[in-house]
Length: 410
Image (cartoon, rainbow, N blue to C red):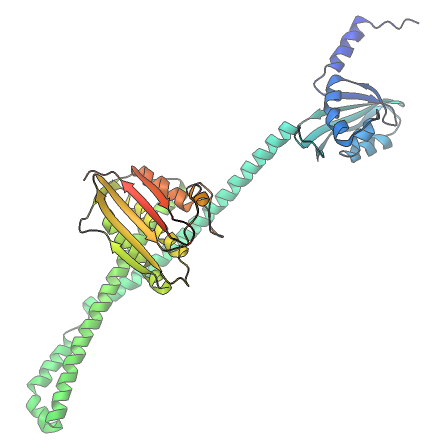
């Protein structure tokens, strides 16, 4: 019998031996009869991880693909496909020099009653890429969900603010339309009838009646003026809040404004302090303000700058322990040469050097419920206004100082 291999068979053997997928020929017990080069490479991590000494395919795949081994063992003895493209993802123990996670795609076919062909390939890179794509899609879906939620919250806050503004406007209009001179007229009338009152009530009661009416009129004017001032102040705050809501809606919609106009930085700081005054009073925090007599102007976005100052003041408030003896926040605005410098100092918890280097990192936060975006976004806004921002502390428990430096045209 002639056992010489023909050129065609030799070529086919070379193709199989150098195929880009692992190809193994086994008997019914899993013993390896033939194994190409890629198959040796792909099985090597399994042999190394499980310290295998035999020459059996089942012993290699059993720990990571037991279902595939069971299907091959139970396959009927007639030629045909046993299974196609069975995917198995697994980790190998003790793999210090190789990546520990793998993903193999396995196909098995019977050639004859005594011979089975098993083809397998490493699809780890493809699997990881698909996972990355899936994670990216998931993250995007979560981000879109948060965006939709943020839009709903902004809408609800906006509606509430509009309602508050409407009621305050009604109060102001009611005060303007009030017949404030009526009590004065009654007082004048009783003064003119003083003699008749003395005859009817006696001198003392007559004087007491006229004095009481005069006092009621004066007190009424004072109360109405206080209400009018408070209503006007609340309406001004509502306008500021609506400005902030407007810019936040633009952020949510991905439409960031680039408009710039002269902004009175002193007024911005004052407005932000006014909006947080009640919170500071409630916590017993003393506000020390030294903003100078000037009204420095910088070219910028007023709402964004308010967002920065509000965030920094709130951080200072939250950093101060409610039980602390010294509770204060100090704001100072000064020209230093051609630079406009704003400093916000608090007597809060402070931080160490290790924390200092991370405070402006995106995602870093020292708060249990923080997002790590506050200081990062603040610095982005300041730098977009041709400024710089730094935060320092002498250590834990020693407060913090935030310094914002602008370079406007004086």
